[in-house]
Length: 128
Image (cartoon, rainbow, N blue to C red):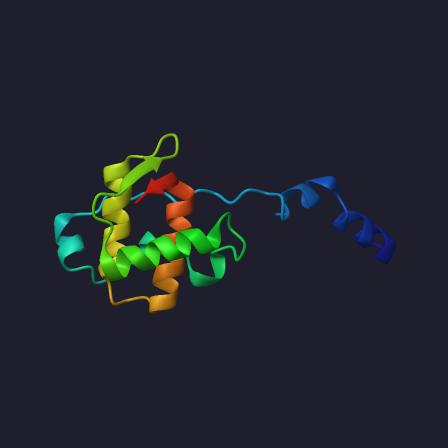
């Protein structure tokens, strides 16, 4: 194969179509079933949240979601009304997030950013 043929092969539309772009919406992180024991003693939660490097730096309304996650962590959200996005089981999602917030495994910055990002993926709005 010549150098020119190799260059042409690299530029195929199929290869370009599989490359993510800024306009490609992120995949929604799956909500997982969390046991009562995991909420009481959340030892390992890395499987419940995206890796720090995989969380987009510019997800929609990031400052507001980060503020909400921080308030929830430090003060609680007593009386909050969670308005889920279509297909989201609110109870299951909140148990998932509660488990992450109670764990000592991830660094605090990763935990708060992860919770904020998951809130933004699973809920339209949270009224406090």
